[in-house]
Structures are given as structure tokens and as C-alpha cells.
Length: 451
Image (tube, rainbow, N blue to C red; front, side):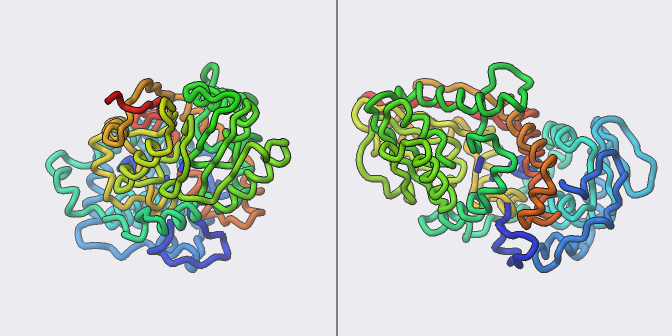
């Protein structure tokens, strides 16, 4: 998985703040004491975002003429036809299904009318709405996203959708900053909700629904499938693009491979180096703080797990060229990638979303078509392609449950209530993206094209 880097005490510039509610254009495309356990049991007044740290969350935007009324009309009309239990303020709840309790209707609709789905996410961060079943609610919304905008207005998307800031572009300099804003938050934060393998990507479970006590084994199963695809064994020269916290590199080294693994995160690099030393595998694992565009040497196998989502469409050609250029004759490339439908990817490519503002600056989930076309232009052909979307939904559920159960420990690390609500929303709507089949995750094997 490719959060804002700020904690309660860190002031930020809203334009520089950092994966979709809109990666779904509703969901793109993922708590704490302020989260309700039952619909409408916690008033919004209990949550007051720090205006210095969260300027766009603390204060709803000025009302735009006609926009708030239009949002109230369109959203209200769409929700009335969905299996959702809606309650606006103190009014009686209507409908059935996952609950949407809007504590402050005026602020809620003003944000949506002004900022669209960015406003929807910021409204949750501000405590203006809650749900008794957040992933269930977001799954319904993701499954019916087209119901929110009348068909004649969808073609006008370019006239109202905000463009991504150019500062989010994944140039060599920009990529380091974008990665820092997500992965350098705190190793201790990730330790709180990941399993002991410290693997931040989809597991592959033996059966579903998944059990929390089986997550580490399922992560190893996922890694072993990728290493098998890449034919990694004794003496294999393996390049990994995107180290994470080092589990794949360690597992490959335990097979007897010689691993070079690349990351742009200093915190990930430091922990991965320490883990390799602790495992007695430092002689086989070379962790480098290095951009994929600076790769040197050739390798028998290249593996990259959920890294392409952080590359950005402008740089996919460079990414696949780097994969191909690093491959020795007869070598294999094994990728794990989140994917979305091609048309939605094209719509999302240039759009500034809640995810790109707060979670993954510069990130873009590719389509299977985009992967295949960019790989082919670089001289790679797809040999195998398998999907595990339901497994990612379960992985995210386990992360979300662990995160919310340990919210007091997250707070003790210095992350305030607004951050915790942001993180809960991020995990929940990512889960919903997979449950609605809007998103998928693929393991792909590639080899050099036959000339």
C-alpha cells in the first residue's frame, strides 16, 4: 500500500499536505475515541480539529452560490435510493442498511458542494458525520458512485474537478518527498497495525474470511508465490524495487538468493538493515536508498510489490524500462499491483483527490491495460496474471480492526484524533474498494518479449 506526515503538534501548509474516496471518485479508488459505535451516539462537538495542523478540516469552506443547495439535492436524492440508513442532524433516520449519521448537515453539504469528495473526506475527519459500519457504508457508495452525478453532468467533469498540484509529480526529487510523507511517518505506527512480518501489501489467505492469527502466514504465502513466479532460489541475483520493511528480501535471502533491494524511505531502510542483521542475512541483503531510475547491474529476477501505484502515469514508461533494463537474458519480473478499471484510471489521473491530498501524493492506481501496454513498449510480455481482490479486502479489515483497537497507542505516539479519523477512513474505504470490486490486486509474471 502506497497519511499526512503531521502529528498533533506539527503545523502544516494545506497546499503541501499529503494512496479513493475519489481514487474512487468515491472511493477511488482506507478512530479513536471520537468514533461512534452506534448511529448518532456521539455528537460532532466532541471532535475539534486543530486549526493550525488541519486548516482545511477545522473550518468548512465558504458557501459557494448554489453549490451547497445542489449538493444537498443530488446527494440526498442519490442516498434515498440506496440501502443506507440516513439521519440528518436530529431528524428521524430514514432507510435501512449501514448508517450515515450527519451531525452537522450544513457543514457536510457545504464541503461537498465546494470540494466534492475531498470535502466528503474532510467532513469525516472533522467529525461532522459518522457511521456504525464505515466499510459497509463506503462499499454501498462505491458500488453506486454513478448514481450521485446525473449522466448529462459526468462529461463536464473537467470543468469542476481540481487538478493535482505539480509539486506531487514523481520526479526524482518529488518522489523522495512523496514517499517521505507516507512511509516515514513512524515505524512504530505501522508496527501497531501490521503483523510481525511488517508487510504492507495484500496477503493471500488459504481460505476466506481471514483470521487475524493467520495474517503473518498469509503474508509469507503471498511472498512465496511471488518468489516462485520469479524462480528465486540458491544463487539467484534478485533485485527488489520497493523494500518495505524487508520481509521479502529476508525470505528470498533465506532461499539462498543474493538480494539488492531499493527504497526511498530512510526509516524503512534503517529497519530493513537491522532486521537483516538480526536474521544473520546481512551478507545476502543489500538495502539501498536508491531511486528505481538509478538502478545499475543486471539480475536474474526482479520483484516489485505494490510499488507501481507510487510511480505516477508520467513515469510508468521509465519504470518498465528500468525493469527491463535490469533483467539478465532469460530473467523474470514478478509484480504485485493494485488495479482499477481503465476508464476510471483515466478520469483519476489528473484529478486531485482526498487520497492524493492527505494520503498518497503523486500516487495513481493503474489499470491492467496500462500495465500491459507500458510493459510491452519496454520489451516485456505478460506470462501469468492472477487476481486476489477479496484477499486484499480481508487484509485491510484486519489492519483496520487492529488500528482501531489500538487507537490509544496511536495517540500515545503523538497522532491526534483528526489523524486517527483520517487513517480509519483511509483503511475503510480502501477495504470498500475491493469489496465492491472497484479495485483488484494482481500478481503478474513478465518475461522479455520474443523478438
